[in-house]
Length: 241
Ligand SMILES: NC(=O)c1ccc[n+]([C@@H]2O[C@H](COP(=O)([O-])OP(=O)(O)OC[C@H]3O[C@@H](n4cnc5c(N)ncnc54)[C@H](OP(=O)(O)O)[C@@H]3O)[C@@H](O)[C@H]2O)c1
Image (cartoon, rainbow, N blue to C red):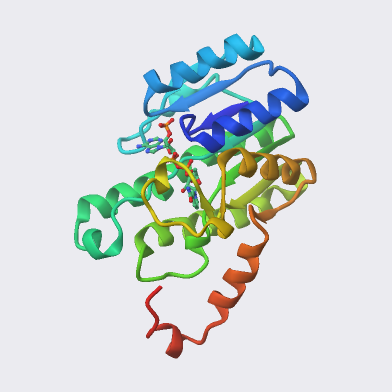
């Protein structure tokens, strides 16, 4: 299994979900921008599950050297890479923030996902599970740089799923809604609309086993986003969302 964004609590909970339900993995690659932190998780897996893993450095704020990933292959990839950046109020005119948000969530991530998708196509099988966001469903004033990157990611995954359909590679798009993780630390989240990383991982695992294409981790988000997407633009433009 390949994990992108290994220090994400959701990614870690998903790895544990797989280990508990399916048993040990032949190979586990933990891609991370913070290897020291990922090392602690690797040690935890070693102690609790006797699962070996290999840590691979990944920093999407700089140019990727794909030759470093040449020998990395798997039939299962889980991508929890994401970066919220500053909200629109403070970050909109900060070009460094905008570039960073676009690089991590979209422009440097897409070639990396394509790299692994091609390998799956060559071995004629595999599953890619990628966390996008409801923020990509409609641009809202609060976080539309992040939202536009996630919208691009969602569109890419839709196209890739379509392209891979007869090539035995399954692409699953996950729209988490709110999750209580380090990304949302300090944000006032409505508890009814928020999941823990372990609950999210369990729901994602079930959806993966059922070969779902697009999921909202909490089903209520599908309804919320249906309403938000269908508000006429002349009303939407006046709302503070
Ligand atoms: N939390 C929410 O409410 C929420 C809502 C909607 C969507 N999401 C999405 O769900 C996914 C998981 O989010 P999370 O809540 O678990 O957030 P998180 O803890 O911040 O995890 C995101 C991960 O992205 C990786 N990352 C960040 N900057 C990177 C960089 N420069 N290069 C490479 N990797 C980088 C980091 O992994 P390493 O430290 O291992 O590099 C980080 O742990 C993300 O795609 C996020 O956008 C979250």
